[in-house]
Image (cartoon, rainbow, N blue to C red; front, side):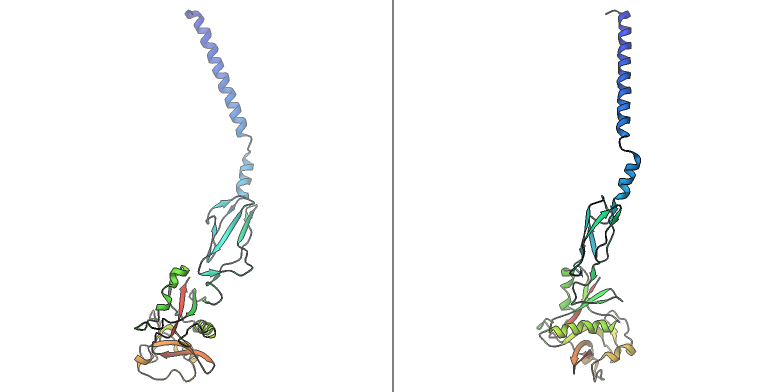
Length: 253
């Protein structure tokens, strides 16, 4: 092939390549136009964003987006519970998740919830033979079981402590008797304070003692505070510590 014949041939090849490129551009443009922008927006807005739940968690995790028609499961924390008729599955529909039941504070109804401190209280049996006396000992393992910090129960909401003691006494939780220690100390006669050092107001505290208490006594004999039953009345009594006593423990939610 000489030079004169080569030029027309190259021009034919160039025209063919341009035609192929133009055809591909039209095809790509046609594909892109098969999903209108407004359809993409509608699909986005009809999905649901997974939120949060007090004392519980959703699956998929909060912040995830799920398509319309899909479901989201709720699991309450070990330190919380639900009612027997609880709804624990939410369905996404047009951008809105259906409501679920609340996760209720405390592991079950045998605990007493103190809304003033966000704590749960319950009575537990004493160690029985441990010496020296350690009122916190029955509470130590609860943190691992329920996934929340545990300690001897203390609060200025005194009726909540008595309510927890009442449940334990009625259920006969402690084999050593109806004595349950709480986190209130009496380091100096009738100078009561919580175990964190917070002073206890006598005006609201003293009326909640059992009949005949408190009486003046050496601090060594009244350094600990218990909830006990005397004459049909459940109330406070400052007393010595004994390993046979139970303890009112708390979970800090």
